[in-house]
Image 1 (cartoon, rainbow, N blue to C red):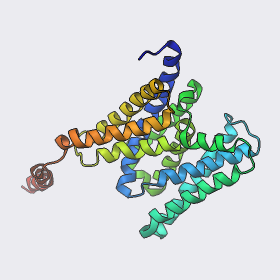
Image 2: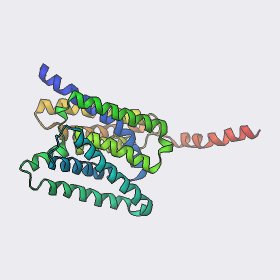
Image 3: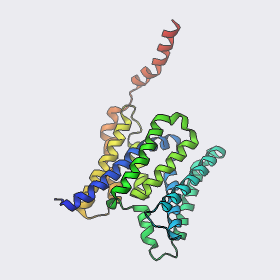
Image 4: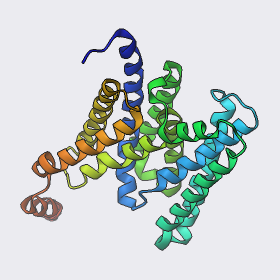
Length: 274
């Protein structure tokens, strides 16, 4: 198996795109699992996709600022809607997210019904075109992701429900246009799911699974001449299963460790009383 200079020039920007998405979506995905709203990214991504397709219907340039604004506005509207429904219908929030996803998916089909290239646009929305990631797009995506990560790690406790949904909508809007809906979902859910029982180094392990999945998936798809997006999704799942079965138990908490952790605050409190 050999790679020429052309392959490398395509693979490196694609890998950079994957690493950027992984860096941002893994910590957000952990929060998604904690909240029990696994399909929120699919719903918001579909709504953002509708915004992109609607802007396309009005003749705006696919790489222009108008399309980005339309996608972000649609995603934010969807995020605020789900914030509201979580407040008034918390017991059926997952079902509401499913309905929003179906509406977004069918809305995309309706918007493309009269477009002769509709099937291509829909495929690009779902599968993405990670191999054609442009350095200029990677640059502004990196800036957006840096802001998201700064706010998430620095202000997570103060963001609240609305802040989380807004950051999530912004991240998904950028990522769907960068790598496609399937990869966004896989990156958000698969690494956090594989490391869900870890209490030590969980974030680092999830990041490593995501990065390795993109790297090996890109290499495999190029060597086998297969679509990169689906191959990366499969690679992420394979690596996650291997990690969960082989390595994750070594980092899981033991009953003794859990008892020690829970006893530590009481010990410190007793020390203060003394």
